Length: 246
Image 1 (tube, rainbow, N blue to C red):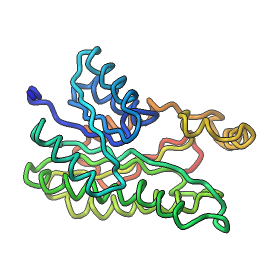
Image 2: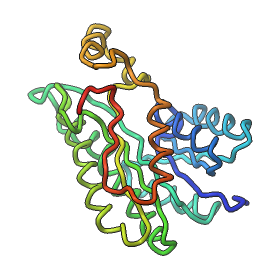
Image 3: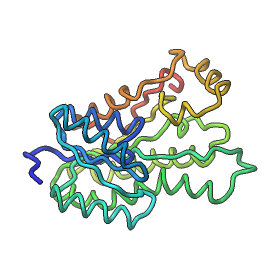
């Protein structure tokens, strides 16, 4: 496939919520977008079609980022079609909220594997080529919960905090090769995941946000575009949370 010298951006979980907003924003800015999805192909088709209809370039790729073998197959397929991956957005994530006393081992492991180990799976496959090409942008979507903690979210908080430490260390190791590694830590954003919260819980959360509202997924996408275009910013956390955590 001809990429017309465009930079290739892979967005994990790029078909829904924050990931969809990121995919659309990158497509609008002229990047060739690879929209990763795991289960729902129709959502991925929708985002790819929107990007193409707007004059951009995009394809979809299926893969479970929690499984290293799936990641390997996915990256190999993308490289075969497009030749390279310049930008990696580790966005896909899940929640399995439960108080620690009631949390099962499987609920712990599923969140850690999907939200944290996936970053290792993906980065281990793209960083060698980025080093060779002397260019790379890696943006990990962490969370305000990784900074402040969250009741009933020890698994999620641990994974998202781990992602911050992972990013800082990888940034140190790759800076000399022209690669930047940064985090975005969203607050509570108006996505399906947040909308699934009980109404009283959600109202209580919003009341604690200084801006008194949920964030828009497009605000996270703007942060991604900023970091993608930054040559001298690495190992940082971009906090987009309405003032919830400062």
